[in-house]
Image 1 (tube, one colour):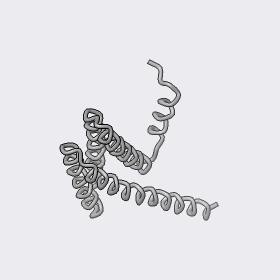
Image 2: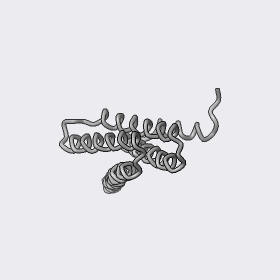
Image 3: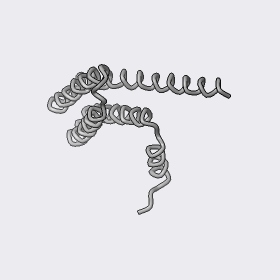
Image 4: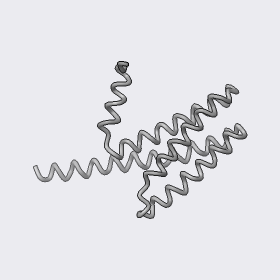
Length: 133
C-alpha cells in the first residue's frame, strides 16, 4: 500500500529527527491525545475519550521507558510522568476534566522546557561551529 504525501512526510520527519526532536514529538502527541479526550468528554463520547486517554498513557509509558535513570532529573521526570499517568486513569474512570486539564498542564510545562533546551543546545552547537570557521 502506497503512503499518501502526508504520511510520507510524517514518516520522513520521524526517521530524520534527532532524539531531542523525537521526545518533543512524543510530548506533542501526548498533549494532542489529552486534548482530544477533553473534547470527547464534552461530546459525551466515552469510547473515543477512552481511546485518546489510552494513547496518551502509551506515550507516557514510552517516555518513562526511555529515561536514563543515572541522572537525578530522570527520577524527577519519572515521578511526574507517573503522577500524570494516575491523573489520566482517574480522569478516564470519572470523566474528570479537571484532572485531565492538570495532566495537560503538567506535560505542556515539560514540553515547553524541553523545546527551550533544544533551542539552547542548537544555538550552542551553532556558535561552536561558527567560532571554528
